Image (cartoon, rainbow, N blue to C red; front, side, top):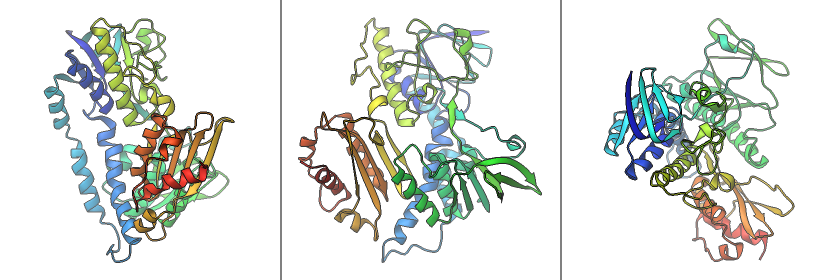
Length: 463
């Protein structure tokens, strides 16, 4: 059995693992990056990148139809949309990512890495990688499949199939009203599918403010998506090559494809956690420095979805950079203190997590979705400013701020409307930086832009 030693071994070669490996390599440490599928990971080939490549043409098409004088045509050309998506994913060719790793001083190791002891990772059962300082787990997440009678017996789509298919199904059912569910429902409806979105709650995106789910449901309806709210699937069967869904509360739907988008779970089931006394299948708990808890010592780290903290690619990359800096500091014999808002603490995970849902209307949020205590005040307004009126005829959008009235700082901001994603980073800076409202009054928004909504929010809140 071959054995090699590195300063650091990173398991998981997606964006999070790449950031962790890149950080320690830049600090002069030797590092191996282990990946069992494609270097670049889920986000690059099956999630963030291809899904947005599918959504963007439809959003532009809809925006063009809202602007007099702009020729929008009759429909999208699916073949061209798929061609552009495939350009961004490289059709699964990760040679560029492997080349980047080697150029950054990282040793790419292809295979399935498992923990087999302290500071020890075994790849495909016959290659042992030992770490002088640290092992970093960045294995992401895997789909969570509901226990529905008959579901295991039919061919379904997961998020990977939904983002990589080059055939437009005539009839598509989407089970789940989270981010993946609403984004893919709209993308495929605009590409020509007849879509049913089946959700258990009253509206999609239940973790957001109610007005967000209502606005997205309206947008889906305008694209012909049938939203089955307060429903579910009691059973699934295959009849004459089609998939038949028995809906909760009565009725059936017969479709050509069923996309199961019911959430994800940390990918720790086959990671070898049992070898170090941790429970497989559970999130790998870490502190704000990225150091794993419950094992003793400071040799095991994790970042990204596998920790269950803030399951978003950008937050995982942020946490990976911090963990890398902590590892580098400890490798030099230093004792970095993970004080909030320092280079050694992923503090934003608790206070300022930004997210965009790339539907039409878009959703952009950071921090709290609503009031969580008596010292929180919520201000809601329509996005009705000169900038939005010029942006699209009949512009509809809403904005919310959540204010800590004791400190007079923002603790949450939400926007919903066409093209609101570009408003988000200003909100993230205000929340993360705890900018006092009295100073935000002096951040004058340019006229005529949608950023004028900041002035209207402050006016509504009061001096």
